[in-house]
Image: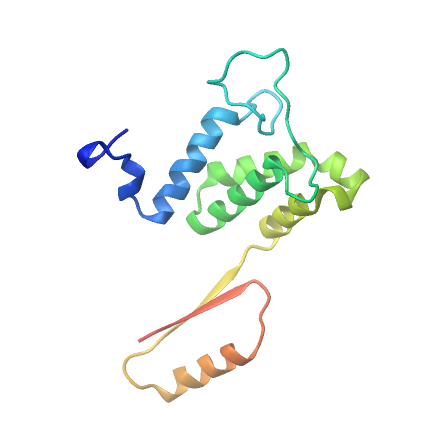
Length: 154
C-alpha cells in the first residue's frame, strides 16, 4: 500500500499506528492458528518441510517471547481484546517449557509479568499554577512506583 508519491503508507502513519499495523501483519503472516505460537517463516514464504518456531530466550529474546511482550503491551495500551487473547494464548502455549527451565525464557516471563500486572498511569490535571497539583507531582518525581507512569497536564 502506497501513499503520496509512491512512498509506503507507513511513512505517513503515527508511531502508534505503525506499531498496530506491523503487529497485525505479524499475526497475519506468522501466527499458527492450529496450535499457537509464531512460526519462524511467514505463510507467504516458500513451502518448507517444517515451519519451525523459536521459543528459547538466549542472549537475544526469541521471536515468540518478543511477540508475547508486544501483544501484552499493545493490549494494555489499546484495550484490544484480540491482542490480549493472542498474548495469553502465546504464553500458555509455551508455559510448559518455561516451567521446566525458567532461566531459558526470561523475556517470555517478562511478557507474562506485564500481562498479569499491566502498568497504571497517574494523571494530575490542573489549571494554571496549582500548589496542590505541584505538590503531588513533586512526590511522584521523588518516589519510585513500579509499573506506574505519570503525567502533569496544565
